[in-house]
Amino acid sequence: MAEIMGVGCTHYPPLITPDEDRGFPVNVTLSRDERLPEELKDPVNWPAAMRAEYGDDQGLASAAVHRGRLVEGFRRVRQEILDFNPDFVVIFGDDQYENFREDIIPPFCVLAYEGFRCVPFTRQDGTARRNVWGEPGDKAFAYRGHPEAARFLAGGLLDSGVDMAYAYRPLHEPGLAHAFINTLLYLDYDRQGFDFPVIPFAVNCYGRAVISNRGGILPYKVNGQTLEPDPPGPSPKRCMEVGAAVARVLGESPWRVALVASSSWSHAFLTAKNNYLWPDVPADRDLYEELKRGNYEAWRVRTTAQMEASGQHELLNWACMLGAMSELGARPVGVEFVETRVFTSNKVFATFKA
Image 1 (cartoon, helix red, strand yellow):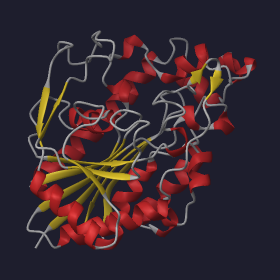
Image 2: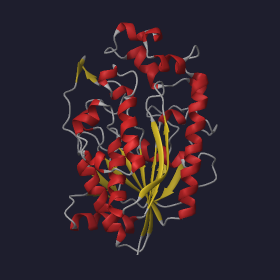
Image 3: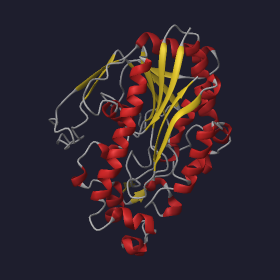
């Protein structure tokens, strides 16, 4: 009989780069987002907490504190995974115009690959990206897949009435989309090894913005015109139903499984009501309190419109995992909220055991 644990974490991209590079999305918004009102380009007009966090060094000092909390969060959930010693790890992650593009946008997709070779420090134009580990730009990371378990999962979901897509090889992204590779890099932040087989479970979190933004912070333009919005992604309720089905299918397997939801919470560049400059902290705090109480129903009844209004698109990854935890009767045993207004998004770390 299977044993299943749950983990929630983030795949925040700037954690890869040195803080002194100041590659924070807020600086992209300030310099390039035409939607930003002129008065908000001056920090004096920001909320007090955001001004304090940004300081007089564009957030450099605060970034070190933020990084420290994230690294400790990853060390803690990593140890929980090591202690559990799973046969494989399923990662619920979003694909932002990486592997899936105009030719197909599946709501969900199980990636049943033999393995994954990723070069995360090389940009699409071939240039190297600086990283906090000082590793060469062409450094490759290899991870094992678990095709047997992935086929079992996809087949079980299809048999149970979930119209699940699956893939045996990449489409556009030769390695892994950033939600998956960043998660694996951060779970091995101290470079001690993380050798568990991986099953990426792609979720269309970005919905209306997945192609119209082409994976970017800013709306994508063609001949000066922004693209029409795309259809929505799956609802939080549907993600929880799928997650519950994942728990039932894997519960009939012989394996020990860690289900990892990887995403930050409200994203500033998705939050229109805050002029795309800071995340929806109150909305995140509300969901966080429900999470701590184990009130998964509060997540189930949240609508797509509510998620989008608060920039919480990526929380569909968490909804999948929480659907599984609800099915298993698992409650959070370690939960931490990392609040910010400058660094794109609030982050939460959590572990769950039945």
